[in-house]
Length: 122
Image 1 (cartoon, rainbow, N blue to C red):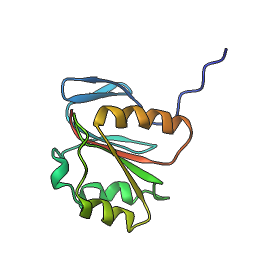
Image 2: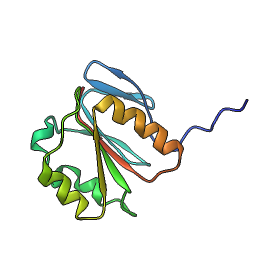
Image 3: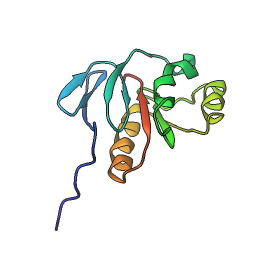
Image 4: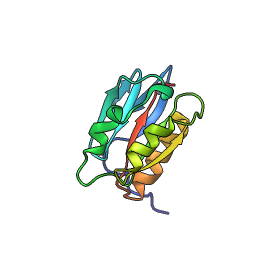
């Protein structure tokens, strides 16, 4: 048996307290992921998300296929206006709790998918 190669870019390796273990560092709150980068995210509540909260992810070149939205500890639907604004730009939205979104990120990146993620704190 051969091991599949690790996906390129940042991967969530675990969870601690309200944050994420990404590659070699602990992110104590929210997290944004692109195929090339992982950075802290200050958003804390799915109900108040706006397109501006993910503007940098929408500006990726090329744009991501979709954005994984981690809604925190529980699965909560993002505001309809938020989803519609992103979809109007030709980018899909997939919402799930942040742990599931972090796991999905690793699987999808291993497949080479060009996606982004915005994960609210746990």
